[in-house]
Image (cartoon, rainbow, N blue to C red; front, side, top):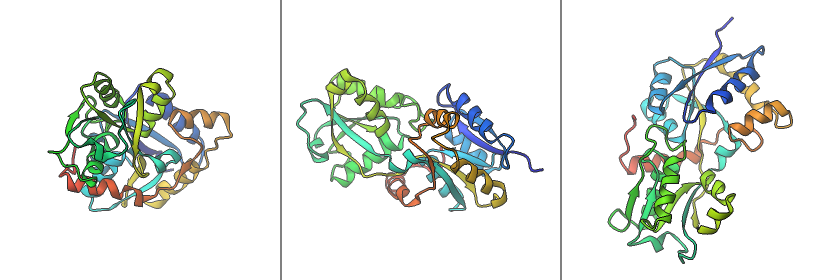
Length: 271
């Protein structure tokens, strides 16, 4: 009997442990058992995937890009959450700012999250450049408060919001999940307004190297995709992991914008 598939994840918050214990329990006793190992940051996790310490990595979009670049494309995305298929970046300002688009940010200060956060730093810089705003046109206020976690904790985005509310920035770039959480807060929602939202792009995926045989991951992926929102115990795990209804097959085309941003901005393929 093959050993359980070993999946890596990053411990960006304490509830990562019960999430992965729940996922492991879901696979227990089935045709594709698994176990998991937690890492302190995505750089370590990508290294572990490439050196064969783990079979599959639950990667952010930046970790996926770095895996592709380090392996010369000899890797594959196995699955992702439905929410990973429609991730977006939101530019917001204090209510009443009058901003209607990115061009209005010329000569302004924009607060960004950690420099390794695709949603709150890397892609926002790219969107500004595509709008004709280079570094000399916009002052970037960077809040590097959770380096290594690729913005998963959301802390740097909350720090950026505080800078905006303290009037030390004119706008802020946030991932859609952070923006939606703010909207659920009546007081905060009234204080800020979104004035530009990016096209959809992909966020996390389960990544494996091409060298992992299909018989090692095929049944596991099938069982993952079979997790049902209508089953209360499955739904509990899925909600904790940030799904809306189902696991999904990847859409690799929606990583193109991040690949371009990493290349254009000279971001390292490692760490």
